[in-house]
Length: 304
Image 1 (cartoon, rainbow, N blue to C red):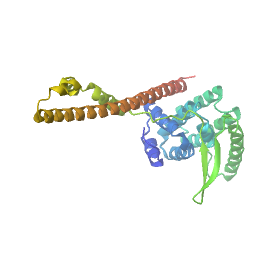
Image 2: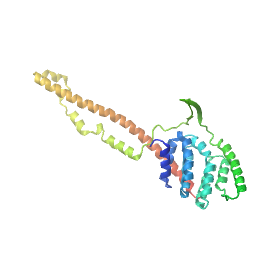
Image 3: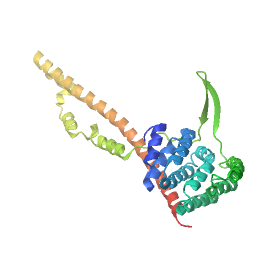
């Protein structure tokens, strides 16, 4: 799994498509890099506003997957998204007024959030209000003023509710580093030990293990066929002259080099097997999370 940069995130959001695999894969990547939750949510909202109308629902599905599937690992995303969701729902409502499927799909998401307690009732109500806000003509400033006041009230309700859900809190502290004030965030437990490998990486590692030292039949046969004189001390008494002694010495050195090289390969293989074990563990966990996300998306897409 690639490392996080904002440019990498923008590229992934640009390439995001409505397929289940695309949404699940990016969702898992975002959850893995949740220590960057503030930048991720800010970038997500910005790119949502730039995205064409037909793609906005996909962005909202992505947010839903991240919010729901990250709950067990920590409250970071639930809390951070709560700050932007009202604006996101309002934006979708204003730009997708003719796409009833988009609005009904988002209504379904809000219903599930309410049922599962993802957010409080007041927050859900503010999101529904934003989602069903009808855009008003620009030439009527009095209506725009009333709309602004309604949004301000809804925003206050949203902030009050988001402080309740999720109940967990992200610990943070402000420190000064090289004269610059920074906020350090302490994440919740269950941070993955390693990056889940890509299938290609896993296949490559498995192939390398197949070609490792313990599977090298040719070298194993050479070791098995080493002359008995090289390992039996009693054979030294049979050396008759200096030439025979030099010959035996050369053979011993060659055998020693062979064994040392093979032992080094075995040590490397042991380390590779440990790494492979961790890769398999991370990959298995990733597949479980993908399955959970697939089930979550299936429930969201199921008609009421």
